[in-house]
Image (cartoon, rainbow, N blue to C red; front, side):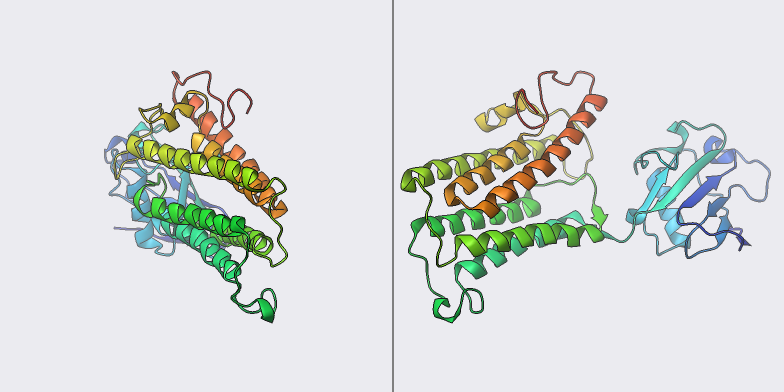
Length: 340
C-alpha cells in the first residue's frame, strides 16, 4: 500500500528520496502506518511523500530504482542516479541497502540523468557516420568539388590507400562494438550522441575533403613516407584490437567484474607493463601514422584533439585502478610510458 501526501510549496531541479523507517534496513516493523517515506522535489512535480513498505534490508539499488519507476514511469532505472550525498558518486545498481554506510535511517538523493541511449547505439552511430561520409568524398559525388570532377578518381596511390585505412579503422570499430566490447554501463545521456557525432562526423568530412581533393599533393618524401606511415598504422591497429580482446576476456558476459589487466602471450599486450590504457596509446599511434601518410593538417589536428581527450580518459582510468587495487603495478603510466 502506498501513501501519498502532496506538498505544493516547493519546486527544485534536484530530487530527494528519503526513507525514515528503521524497518528499511533492519527488516522489522516500526509499528507506523507509513513504514517509509520518499520525498521527490522535481522541476515539473510538486514534492510527493511515498511509502514503500516492501523494501527489504537485502534490497539492491537496482530494485529501489525499479520500485521508483512503478510510480514515476518517466524516470526509468537507467535515467536515475541515487546517491548518499548530493555531491557524491552514484550508487551502483548492485549495492545492497544494509551494506551502505547508514544507520537505521537512509537518505538517498535522486538526480535525473536525462534521456538515455544505449552505448551500442551511440557507438554504431558515431562510427558509421565517418565511414559513409569519407566515401562520399572519395568517390567525389556531385556538389562537392565541382561538376567536372563528379565520380572521378584520384591519380595518387596514397589517396586510395588512405581510404582503405580509414574505412578499415571504422569497420573494425563497428565490428568491435557488436562482437567484442562489454560495457559496464548500458546507457549514456542522449544529448551526448549529438556532441560525439558532431566531433566524429565533422572531422571525417574535413579530413576527407582535403585528402580526396583534386588538387591534393602526395607527401613530401613520397613512397618511403607512405610505407613507414602505413606500417605504423597497421601495427597500432593490431595492437588496439589485441588490447580490446584482452580487456574483453577480463569481464565475463553479463558481469561487471573489474580486474587488473596484465600482459598475455600476445606481444601487443606487453604494453600493459608500462601503461594502464594501451588501447588509447595504440589508437593515438594509428592516427599519427595516418597523419604522416596523408601529410594533411586536419588529420594532425584530429590526432591532437583525440590524444587530449584520450589522455583525460586514461588518467581517470589510471586513478580508478590505483584507488581500487592496492597491488596495482607502480611503474605504469596512464597512456605514454614513463611520461604521461
